[in-house]
Image 1 (tube, rainbow, N blue to C red):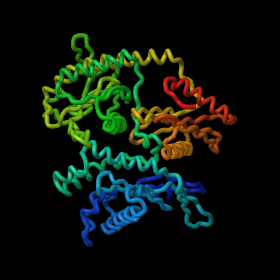
Image 2: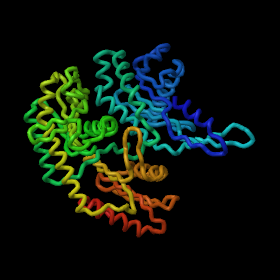
Image 3: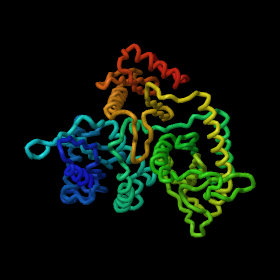
Image 4: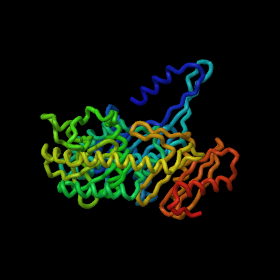
Length: 484
């Protein structure tokens, strides 16, 4: 499908213009070499293959090639098999999330189509060095984490219903998920997979904490709670790795599907009824769309957390009022009834509505105190490996389908390169790069934290750039110790 659409586009191109093609997904497959060990049984190894219309023998050939590459590289380093293979036209990424289960993603390199003179066919130049292994390797690992969040591990499905059940689950999940992979806008944020936290004063934070405690006490079924505001996390009772992937699902998939005109004034038809003097704007984002509907279904998505040790299967209830959203997670063995949902709605709706307007007010006061935001001379990405906190002034908006960055892709690639250098060493370090376009790019790594700054100062020298970054650290990160 991808190939057709880009080919059609190129035919329409007239004149002497160069055409640029961004990286795209060529194929994605999952196999287990143990499932078809004998000759003639190769097809049994393949558990999922996209695009599915590929001819059977080609699927078998591609899987066989990957097996051979993995085996060949194992001879040099038995503990660390191949992660990626670079060729002129594409790049292949390998990941073994569970023993003998291999995931492979093949990405076509970006390319430039140059029109030729005298009616000869156009020439295509592949840009072999433009794709970063660290970024797309992270995207592939994310594919597995997201599958595991909603289905549990591969081996669990295999144990429960054999290869057939596993194939069904993979087909059902990846058929939809691969459509949301927008490989042209993947960047450093995919490597971090961080969480954006909402800045709060102590009093409001305590209000939220006591709200969570009250709800967990009243609704004793609730096992874990997570609280978000404006797509940023404030409170979570989940393990970090589980929260990180749940956060990605909420902010890139669930929330964007539900961004309807929030509160069109007080007479909003959403919740005309006002209990006493309590406003109630709460509603379920998962589960019943309308509690009043006699046909309403009380089915919620299931998620799997703590899959390493205790393996918990939970109902995921996402409930929202204004800009605040709360996730309640309840043991999947419990059947959720209409009564329970009505009880939750009546208890949480008014309180959450109040809390949301509290947070909004507090946030606006804090913004006014900190002064007007003028367009700064620099843009930055910050990431903390300990609590997964992430902050970016480079990304204007990041949803599943689009990552709008306010800087040129070349600069994003420099950031990725600096990050790869940091990953190679344990020590703290600083890297300063002057890009061809007169931008300065600075990377600082200090005590599990990484900061990347892009400065647009044409005539600055190294000393001035260094001073500027120090100033930024002092204003934006005054309580964080960056080694000089």
